[in-house]
Each structure stands twice: as structure tokens, then as C-alpha cells.
Length: 238
Ligand SMILES: [Fe+2]
Image 1 (cartoon, rainbow, N blue to C red):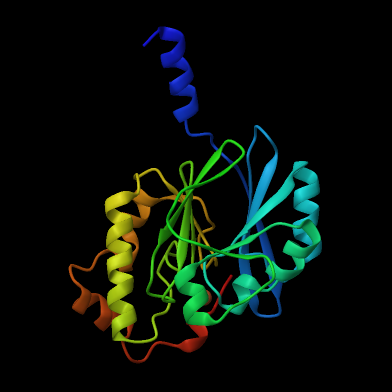
Image 2 (image 1 turned 30 degrees about the vertical axis):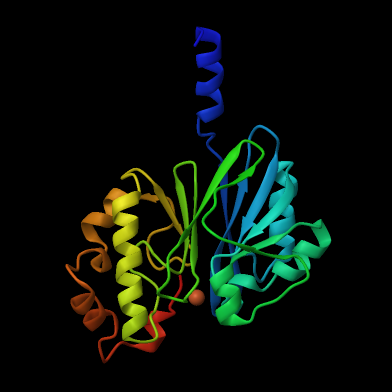
């Protein structure tokens, strides 16, 4: 292979770093982190879990000079899909959700696109959907060039709620998979903020996120489902 061809291959394989903008949106007590992810080469963009405040999201798109090309949904809970239909119609773009989430939630929209873990491209960005069941049966995280958009799978200080023992076991397996597959410097961007804001490297979570410390499904589930949890604190988003 000539040096020029080798260089072209290296460039094609290079991971382009996205421009990531956090947009904090709220409706009463519900507070969510939305993310605008822009390909710096083509200015094509995707939005993760758009909800509550369309004006804020449109303003962020305008400021970035970006074209919305996809809406990436982590899971079908209402606070993560609230504006998916409206925005996908206005911008004529697909709404990505895992096949499993669609089947188990019954969620539907005209531009809904069932996806699996096949990597997707948006301009120069490579997007890797990672199935991470536990909070819901078809939760997806999206890894994009050194960033993980984690929905309600992984928070900076915790992890998402699990409805029963089987779900908690699935969540343990999902978190173990992230431990195996994520680079330590991957920036974590959850769907909600409790104390620290998004963008913390995974290596830090590995040291002090309680839910990443359990040795097996059983002990994880016993703690995740423990009695006496204050329900207000479980949704006490900052
Ligand atoms: Fe949720």
C-alpha cells in the first residue's frame, strides 16, 4: 500500500469528534438533559431525547448552524420522547429507537425507525448504538466519538430505576458490558443530572459510582431494589 493510500485509509478510519451541546430542559419538576450532537464537517446534527422546550432546542440548532438529521431516543419514557414527533415532522428526520423498545413499549410515530446495534453514520460521525436493558427492556446508549449518551441507564452518581429483579439483573449485565467496552476517558452524558453535570470521564464513575461496584447480579439487585428508598429523591433532578 502506498503512503498516500495508507494516509487516506487512516483519515477515513479516524473518529471525528462531535460538537456536543447540553441543553437543560424542564417542565415543572421534570428536568431532562437534551444533547445536540453536531458533525463539525457537514454541520449535520442529531438530538438526543428531545423534550419540554422546543424553543430552546431550535435556538441551539440555529446557534450551531446545524441541520437536524436524526432524533436519537434512548428509551420510550415520556420525558425522553415528548418532542420527538413534533420535531421529526418539522425537520423531516427519522426518530431512532431500538426494535426491542418499540415492541415492548408500543411507542409509535410516523417517522419512527427501528434500529439495532449496527453502527450508523451522520456526515463524518460514527454512531454506535449499544443495547443496555434494565431501566427498560430496550434501552439504548449511543457512543459517538469518545462520548456516551446514556439516557437513564447510567447517571453520574447512580443508575436508572429497575422495576423488578429480572430488570435489575439485566441492568447489572448492561453496566458490566459498559465496563468492558468503554474507554476510561469516555465522557458520560446522562438523561438527568443529580449533583455533577454531564461530561465526567467514565474512569471517575468507576471509582465512586456505587452501582458500578457490585460483584454479581444478586448483590446488585438487592441494593437497587432495597426497601426504604425515598421516592422523591429518586426523581430529585437538579
Ligand atoms: Fe426513564
